[in-house]
Amino acid sequence: MDKQALQRELTQLRSRLDSELARAKSRRDPFGHLLQRLAVQVDPSEPEPLDNTLLAQLRDSVAEQEAEHPQLAAVARQLLDLLSRMGV
Image 1 (cartoon, one colour):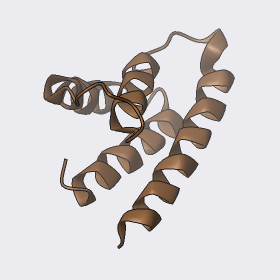
Image 2 (tube, one colour):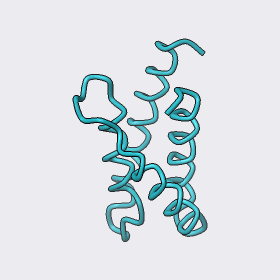
Image 3 (tube, one colour):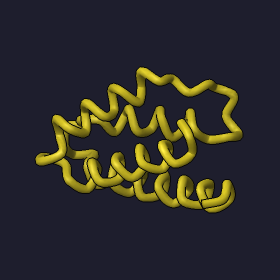
């Protein structure tokens, strides 16, 4: 997959993430804050370097909260997969 395709997929995931976080706002936020921080860090226009501990925290949180928040967990897994394909 070329870099532009990965960037388009990242943009789509950010949009889905925003939607899922808006839907989950009335519930406890299990890992949405981590997803938001990660989405900002992987944006190529942002100067902030990627924090690898954030990736580990997100993986752990997704595993813990997957049953309770399946849609948000699905977006998180897709984001982690995309980052892996990008070499992050």
